[in-house]
Image 1 (cartoon, rainbow, N blue to C red):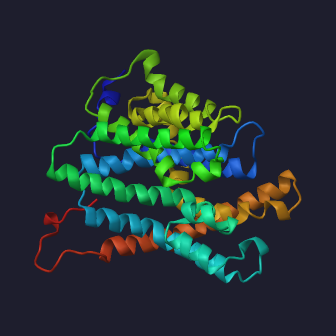
Image 2 (image 1 turned 120 degrees about the vertical axis):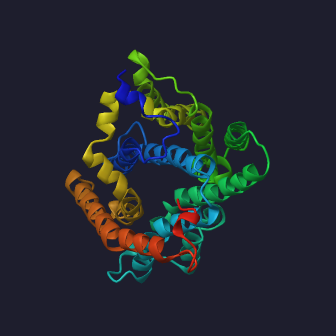
Image 3 (image 1 turned 90 degrees about the vertical axis):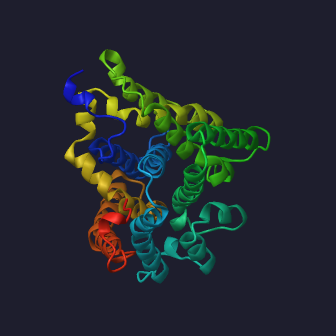
Length: 352
């Protein structure tokens, strides 16, 4: 491997375009999985799992490597998530077109805005148009847990990779027991934070464990992240039981994202393609809005043209959300929210 690739060190705090590309692949898989489904695999679930392992790597890097201050960390998470999600909830709740699948009640709105959909759905029916917020709920809950662990790690000496790995294993065993012994369904088990957080924690543990190792992958090993990602996807075919999908399958994806910046330059170049990077930047707004059109599938003819029309509408609304709501609000909040007191040099204030 050339020296130019070797400089991609694990402790490089710069934003890697390949991770934006990974995020772009994730949202494209979700979109096409929802609107052009395959009979032998649920690609929507694969896309969500790719998002989870990426979040685990990124959040752990922010909190345990860069050691970002928790105030700015949470402010930036809120600035990214809340404006676009609140706008989506407001449009769906007002429902000026009278769309039947968009009819929601106060409980569904409250569960969505409080990121508790994945638990409220266990005891009450939340409108399907808000179902996708289960995954955002898992992520938000994981931010809180990781922040608590970060506070503890800054006070005491802790083996964070081991701790994250142990918590991930406990969550995996929890899901396995409830699936095999309790006979519960995917929605009853793998939408819950106490089970699905394993994906985020495992990816974080892998990343912290290997980031200090400066060994450069060469030869066939440089394609290992691609092989691992493909194996992780293979574990997600319908024939594989859920408890294996979200244990061995997730482990493969966590290893892939944890080692992606050591991959072969050709693979990195593919992930760094501008179109994938752009879809990665648009991914949150696209994910939020795609559900609004996904729920309309049953009301339209089951033709390829109808599904592509819904997909086009979802992408259009997602892009409008990004450029009109998410990006301007995020920039405004990050610029003005929590600014340093007058007289305090900005260099003394921790920023993400």
